[in-house]
Length: 297
Image (cartoon, rainbow, N blue to C red; front, top):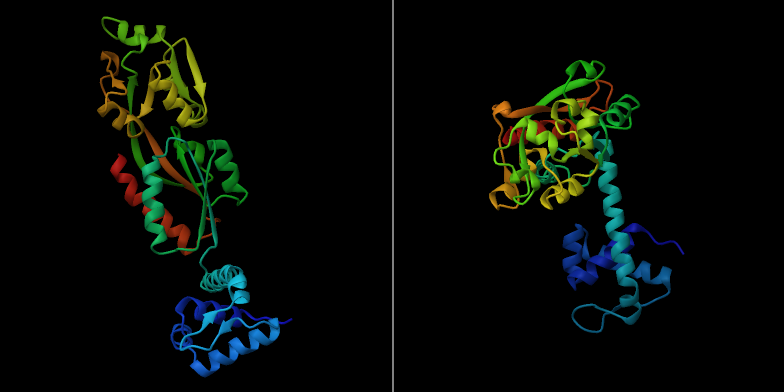
């Protein structure tokens, strides 16, 4: 049995449009040629796939049983052709991004929505990794883009550093958290109450700047971090973008202390190397990240 992609695509098109003429127009083929392609498929399979006794072709029972399989195969072949065309044009088929857990989820959503308008078939893989893992991945070529929270820009001398934004942090806790039992919250009082510290702060080397309490818990996952924070398990320095809606809805309560009168900020940046793949998708992602990140500064 020797079945071609052309035959499968013709079969699906006739079944979907319900007409040889419409299918021929859809596939940019002559109706007579398309009819011969279907005839050859029926010869190869030794099955009658369409009942042609009426004005329009109707799938036979054999045709119905094969349709879903043919539909899937047709879509796969079209996807394969698109990938071949993309590779020919130098368009990457896969992009790998390592990122800190403090990167705004909304930023990722905006970037992906925009990139899909231009590159529908590219697979973009997002992995939460530490700064050390990101740097190692960039050096060995496994990573195309790193989105990292940083403090010391000298630590990235071997990479291409692109500043994205100065991310604002705020102090907050659940409204019923023990820290609010104090008549006045000060730096000394903060030291007496449990603090929740995101593991990415240690990865970025800012833990000494944001860890105040003598009692602190290190938490790796942002969802767990926010869940414990809203449950009243402690107070935290946290990126404002991650909690602003919860503060607005009184799920969390922001507080300030005299010793920290200015807004605490830390840079979020792109890491990459000049040796990294410089295809159009990667370049466009970098542009979109820079463009949309300004909203969170």
